Image 1: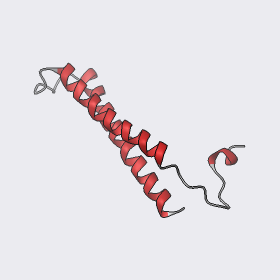
Image 2: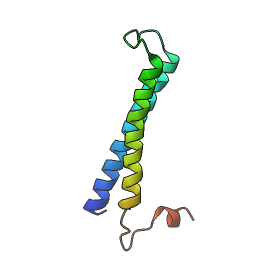
Image 3: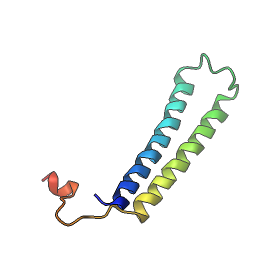
Length: 83
C-alpha cells in the first residue's frame, strides 16, 4: 500500500467516525431524553448534530471523488477478489 492510500484510508476512517459520532448523539437525544436536561430544545440540538454529521459526510464525498485510491500493479482490487 502506498503512503497516499494509507492517508486516504486514515482520513476516510476519521470522517466516517465523525458521521457515526453525531448520528449516535442524535439516537441518544431521540431515545434517552432522561439526563439531557441541559438541552431544552431537543429539535435544535438534533439539527446542530445533523449539521455536524453533514459536514463530515460532505468531506467524505469530496475525498472519495477527488482522491481515489491508487491501484498498485500486482494487487487485486476488491472487485477482482470477490469474483
